[in-house]
Each structure stands twice: as structure tokens, then as C-alpha cells.
Amino acid sequence: MNRSEEAVSAEHLAMLEDENRKPIVFGILPTYRRQDLLLDTLRKTMAQTRKPDCLVIVDNESHSQTAEIVTTYRKEFPETPVLFLDAGENLGSAGGWALGMKEALKYARNQDWFLTLDDDDPPLKVTDLEKMYAFALEQSRRVENLAAVGIVGARFNWSTGYLVRLKDDQLHGPVDVDYVGSGHMAMYSAGVMRSQGVFLGDLFFGHTEIEYSLRLRAAGFRVVAHGDLWKERRVEGNRIGLTLRPNRKCEIKWKKYYVTRNYIYTMRQHGRYDLAVKRAFIQTIAKPAYTAMTSPLLAVRGFRLGLKASIDGFLGNMGRTVDPATFNL
Image (cartoon, rainbow, N blue to C red; front, side, top):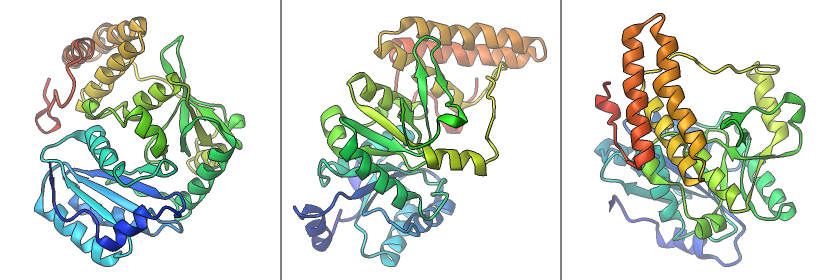
């Protein structure tokens, strides 16, 4: 990994090292082949009424155009420190976040927060970060062992192995959850990351926040969602009273491979081989059998995807084991 430019100026470094400063927010943003969206996402992020105090941008493509976009951004927002990292290869969102978090820890204090950002998913409202920053500080005072906050999350049912969607009437005030997802102002305590480690970069893509949050929960930390903003999201998205039903058919997508592999790996890490076997059975037997009734070819491909994901998950073959650009099963 090569640093594309000097990490931070002397002035910015003095701000970060100020012993009397308030808790600040580091935005961690990995990017890959999204130069057409990156600058717009950065501008919308900085249009927040409470802006990130420092941005860590990880280029998973090592593209000169990305460096040019960061240079343009620095000129537009000179007051904001930017750490620009050239990953040297495609580390996926998980690896990009992990690399950015490790770099940010060099500058962060334990009371600071890490905000996960996506290059194609800017904040929905200009007040999102301001409200979540205030929420994070408030919960830090009230909640012992607080590790993460966010607008949207879920609970994990260790009996069934599925995430549980909270009921609409449960969404008010602080809500204890088992994970918060990126794209909804998910923020993680820098102090907790320093003691417990950062995201698992070897996941490459998918299940990243779930794996990390479940790891934190197992260590005795708490994850809290902003119930009122969460319900507001549902109302505005016309999702009140929505009932989610699992897809019974095979999905032939590289993202599905990684989600399945990473789920199985995560359950193994928690000693839940029963749930890992259950997911492998669903992906290699149950879904292909159901799909075969209408599309035998799709069922065969689904079986291959499920089998590879299951084998890799059980054996711990992690990292970029499937290339999104050439994915074919």
C-alpha cells in the first residue's frame, strides 16, 4: 500500500493532536471504479450541517482519476484533513474500511467516532450526521460499554440464525440492536476499535457490519440505534407494516456468494456450526431444489454457487476468492 500524497498538513495534524479538542468524526470511505459518483458523494457528505472532521479515502483501484478527484475535493474543502490511501489492489468494501480504520487509529483518540461511508451512497438528509453525532455523545454518557450507533439496524436470532426486523412500535428513543448497517450513519467508537480490532478485511464484501457487531456483542459491548430516525426512515420509504419474506429461488450474483461464505465463516467463529450447516443446506440443496421446478439451469448454477461458498466458508478460504469482474458459475 502506498500513500498517494502527504497524509495531513501540519495545521491539520495540530488539530487532530489537540488534547483539548472535542470528539471528532472520521469518515471512512473505500472506493472502486466509481469516479463518476465519488466527487458527488464527497460534496453531499460535506453538505451536512455537521461535517465529518476528517476523511479517509481508500482507493481500491489505484486509479489516477481517483487521485485527481481527491485533489479537487481538497481544494473545495481545505479545512478538512484528508487521508488518501492507495490500497494497491481491490480489497472490497470490507478490506477498504479495515485499511482506512487502521490508518485513522493513528490519529484518533478513544472518544472519537468512525463513520462508514460508501462511494455511491451519500447521506439521505443534510442533518443526518449532526443528529447522529449528538446521539452518539448522549448515548456515550448513558450507556456503559457503548461500541456503535446508527439509524437502522436489526437483532440477530441465535435460534434461527436470521436477522429480526423490529416492529414499528418498537422504534422510539434508543433501541438496543445486534448490528447497525452502513448507509445509515453507522458510527463506531474509536476506543472500542483500538481494543477489539477493526472490521475483518478478509470478508471482502458482505456481512461485514454484522460480523463486526456480533463480535462486539459477544465481547459484552452494546450497539444502539436511533429509534425515532429509524421510524422516520420507514415512514418516508413507505415501509411501515412491511413483512419481509425470504427469497426461495437461487440468486447468481457474486455478492450472494460472499454473503453466504461470510455468514458461514462468522457462525463458525461463534461456535455455531449448526447454523453454518443450516445455511449451507439452504444454499446448496433447498434453494436449488425449489428453483429446479421452473429453471433447471439456474438451479445448477445456484448449487455451484452455494457449494463453493459453503466450502470456502467452512475451510476459511477468505479474501477475494471470487473476482466480481469475471464472476461466472
